[in-house]
Length: 407
Image (cartoon, rainbow, N blue to C red):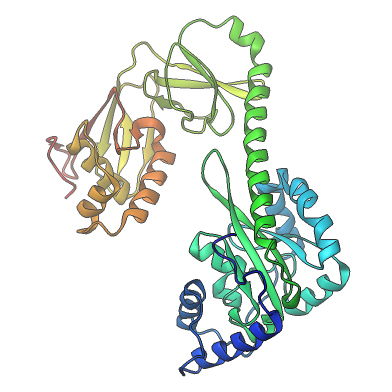
């Protein structure tokens, strides 16, 4: 039995609807409910009330234009697996009177399928393609609450915040890219409340697992296409090299041991790859050939704390520089001071904010930094990559010692 089920086998659904309605009304009125709402529901109601939403009316549901929905569909990796989701869920949906809904990571409904009669009821609720079903827009609902909780959620009847959603149940689970861990969206099953069956949660879990396994296969197939498209070129190339796809995932390597991914290659700039030094990306078939731009593997970088800060590679045969944010510069100076042991997210949080409660912000900041400078900084722990030396020039033009900090 899934741990997030709203009901248990044998639950009298009609009676449960009546009890939950009393709980909903009492809690929102500040009274004493006949029973406590489930913890996930109580947390969501608290968040929604803090946002000032009104349970007695339908809150904003203005759908995105069809063109924007189509653009999001084309750009979503879930487009690669939506057919698999249909195979698992839609045939059951037709027999069981529920909708299959797939959203992106913003909670925008991209695909919605199911029996006509249920879709018409959903239309009246504003549960349509292009609508944003986050807690901030439509209150407590399985899609928005799954996004807020970063976990699967099932809601039944009056566990929804809006009264208009009380005739429904919904079961939603986040779906992540199995390679990057990136949140891609949510898979949801919704239908009339009195038709909820305990097996629905397991069905959604199965669909998500299948989709994630298919995404992994698509990733492996893409790397194989990259390898096949470059076979002829690779046969005639000597020396250390990498072959990567458009996102920097390594399809082939020779003479170098690297992690699974490097900075995303671009034809208009050099790449700094620890172990290879400064590299020139060359388009080869469906991928990129990454080879050293010059002899030697050492990378000498210089951080100029001007306004805005700029990072330069002094070892580059061709000029290479990239602007950084002030926070990026702060992080680089701290990592330089930490040396080879590096720093954890908690240590960086303490150094930047005065406590260790900002680890999520730190991880996001380092991610943005790595998008700008690639493999010059590594993770687990955060530190300058092997072979990278960093000098720092203060705002007055003077070099800072290794222990110096941003003024």
